[in-house]
Length: 162
Image (cartoon, rainbow, N blue to C red; front, side, top):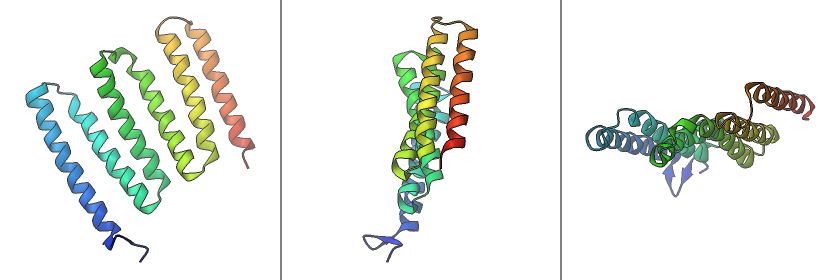
């Protein structure tokens, strides 16, 4: 009975999740076109609902790749909506890097993968570096130098992990 949750097969739950997420996507796309009149919102709604489906798949079948990609898509969609509502779309690249950092952290936390923790912290510092560059606190050369240090430290850590 490993393939069942409360006497319901896991594949049935996954199919139901897919159908519900597609229906929510179609409804939210129609609302975004007709009511909100934002032609770019459908893609980020797609990211949110497919990300939710992949997270459910990850929880059901213990797939780390579904956890990473699902949390990444969910974070990308939610960060776009946050930036759109807060009127800070010019800082969306920073939030995009934070989405990668968050998904790496969640994958490392739930699947006990040490490298994802280091990748998460590296991406977090990269997002700070990018933010400082975007608000003109540092020059392009300092930005690239910090980026190079972050990459070198991550590569060194990758080769020293057991």
